Image (cartoon, rainbow, N blue to C red; front, side):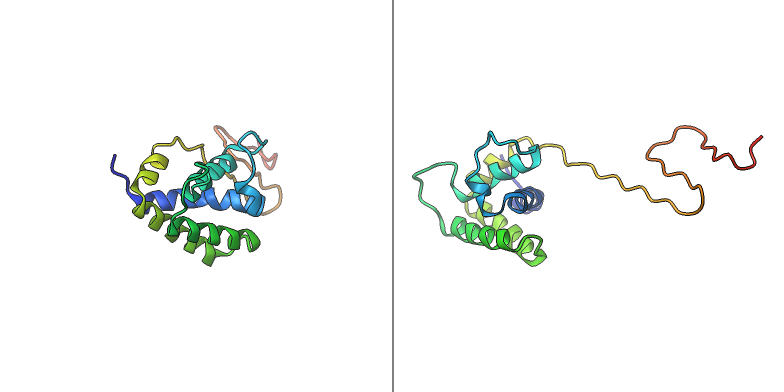
Length: 143
């Protein structure tokens, strides 16, 4: 299975950063059975696989250690866009150096991304509607 590691790193970074932001450095130590939502749980699984913590007793590569260091730094300063970019690059480097990890993660089913809906309205009696399949009547000058 050929995996586009650049695209995969781009796709995985939001899950990894969501997990690390939600739980900080403890994210790697939390167990799968915790009441975490699907995105955070998937992010935890990614981080365990990328850092080698999914296979106890295995030797950590230089790329895995660099990634773990960046995760620890990101946990202490969540939301740092520069560190998120560094994380994405390190994920890409790690998966390029370890194509078996890229193929493994590339085959995992991803949870649906959470949907965010923002509805904005302005003006007197302006309706704010997510989906409308008919007429909206505000009561002004209707017959």
